[in-house]
Length: 256
Image (spheres, helix red, strand yellow):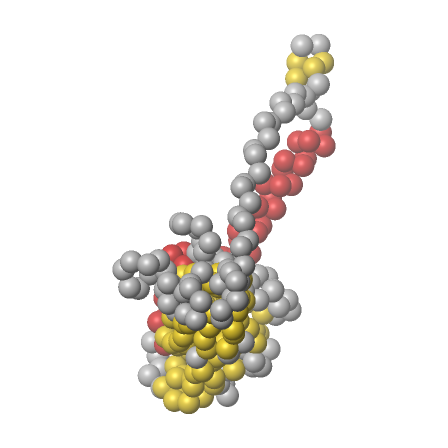
């Protein structure tokens, strides 16, 4: 099973986009107004220094949802997704669904307007389930990503959370244009919340260990050798499984 994972935008965004283009190639159908995407909570009023979790919720089209790329635009002078410079976005995706589902999901942020830091949160991913008679995607409303916005603006500042959907495909490669609902974060006049950032823990010095010596020769037990072999085989098996599930997801998305 290919789990839902938090992956960097540069590594997965183009893979998902490439899969979307691959699936969309045979079909030019576009369904307008099918499905809905919004953020939850829709409106938040908090003091500066707060941490506000905002989830991206998808309501699938009638044919289900197989691939999505969703952006949330915000004002970086009011909120940010990373408390430290050059750190990754603070976000998470859904837990692994299990069963016959092959899925991959990621979230990240990027800087569209130079200066001021990242200003777009991005949720992206794919979901394919083999039902025996064909492939389906997400069929019920669910959160595909949660972004933790760190509020750092001044009192009475606010930012819109503008939802922009750039890909919303069903397993038959039909693209959909869902309705959207934006959100907002407003800073009230309460005293700011000061949350110190703890320093990273010191790295302990490694303690050297040595195998037992037998007559001046290093003795390696059979169990240690077998454990290393088992680990090597497990890594190979995981790699083969990952490759197979990626191919399975693409093939199922083309068959109904």
